[in-house]
Length: 350
Image (cartoon, rainbow, N blue to C red; front, side):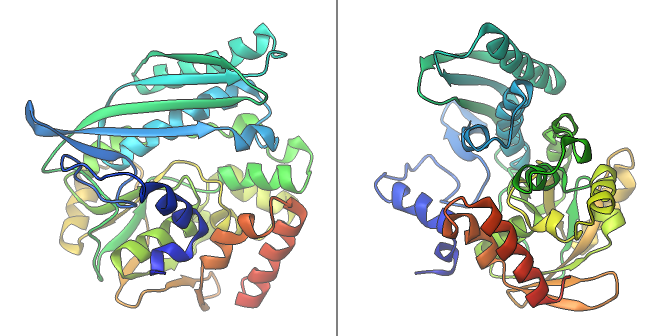
């Protein structure tokens, strides 16, 4: 087993992908980018970027209860993958599978969430498919174009590069913890979770980033995946007031939740995490003052992840048990939270 296959999700993907022939027209290899990048013979300047995602577990487990959220995330999750490769969206096609018992109000609210997300991102749903199924599953496939010489991938960062995010993190994990711990909705209403794909930022980063990935699986999982792909490590300055979104800081204060959980959980918020060569950093910040880029750390040679806590304590962590935990507990949320907190205490994060 190689390093990347120590993560259960990566192994599942590999076990499917090994059955399929890799086309010569595909630029990226397995795990190397958020969207697939395909050469177009009639267009030597651009790659066709394609991605697909399904919102199903989030619905059946009760993580998303508002139909509008379900529709919104179906669109934004896919557009976020396009953003992470620096693609300009062309549109989406959708597959909507719902129970026969779902009423028109539910359908309308899902559709409203999808359409409002498209309007927000200035793109369109071009067509799709509908099905009657035992459980709701919402799938979208998004596609766009990205210049061949500027396409972003997850590969390319080197020791000495700076690490940035495109905005405050933690909204996805705040919502997930509310659901798992059965906290009252008042602490983090689902309506606060409306992540927006960072398309504009992705277009800018094509000129600066050495690698890029979205934070749909949370910050630590994103760093861990990049570590395994590039064979490098990361040192992260955990200034929570800088890294976390304001509503997440408020949530942590009200519920006495340790801040580190907001970057460690597996439910993210579709910001972009990217690395930049040191000699490009000043230019990036000077020429894009209207965009919100937050420097959170640096790339290092040693392949591990170090967190510099607010008290200046430096903690090296192994993200493997965090990323595999949902699979290991079989979806038992109470056990998940218990084991998660136990890891934090073991690492000295609590």
